[in-house]
Length: 316
Ligand code: PGA
Image 1 (cartoon, rainbow, N blue to C red):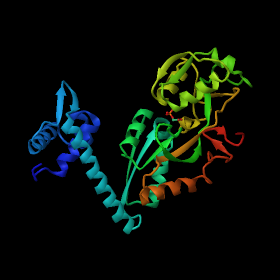
Image 2: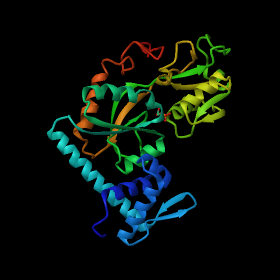
Image 3: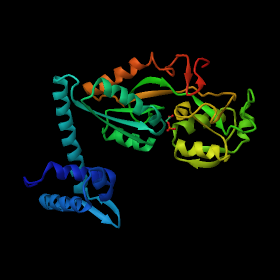
Image 4: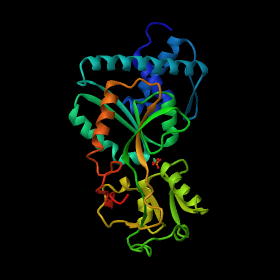
């Protein structure tokens, strides 16, 4: 590779490789598409081989491209580590924290980051919210410092620290015929039309396991990839569902009926996770300590009492 290849070009190339799209890379980097295309052309000329193949809008990497993408990630990881070591020398004045959160964790992760940021205003924060598949891919590529998940992955060896309760409650529209009833059986719930999260969702798995253990199968009437869409569907009388009570954070009490059903709330936890063997940065360590310090204060801390999103935690 000739010496005029620039870090900027590698940064653009890494984004294209990760997002499989020139358009999305240009959006992420706040560049125009012609700039991105021109920089990629220059990079390809400098390397002397084609790096990407484009069929329509779909971009895929050539074998040389894949190798360069890995090399770019390694270079940026080394630079990140360098930045971190400078940050370590300066204490926590400066540095980076890259977090990835599974869909439902988006209800509390920004609040925690906001509080952490007040303590360490110089730290540059990034939070990506995504589904399980992407979390596993990111872990395998070692892209983020910490992951906020409802279930530590079995596929990858990880260090998982429980940070908060994650009770799953059954929700119906306020006028639903089951609202206000006591001890609703699982058999009765199974007769209702259900609105379910996508396959792979931790919430969905926990619900299905509860019913399967009783030999019951839920037949989803509707499958939606977002908790917000599920809440809208419940209010539109399309069915009932069960969601983490964190998904109710910004709702007024009474906006949904929380059904008093057998087996619910399903008691789960949120975990902060990183790949075993990864040396976590001083900033990531400080964030983890901050999360653990929050446990005593959070109404949803494991074993803690009090109200969580309008649901009494004390009873579970
Ligand atoms: P999810 O939540 O349903 O958004 O995947 C994670 C989990 O509760 O495991």
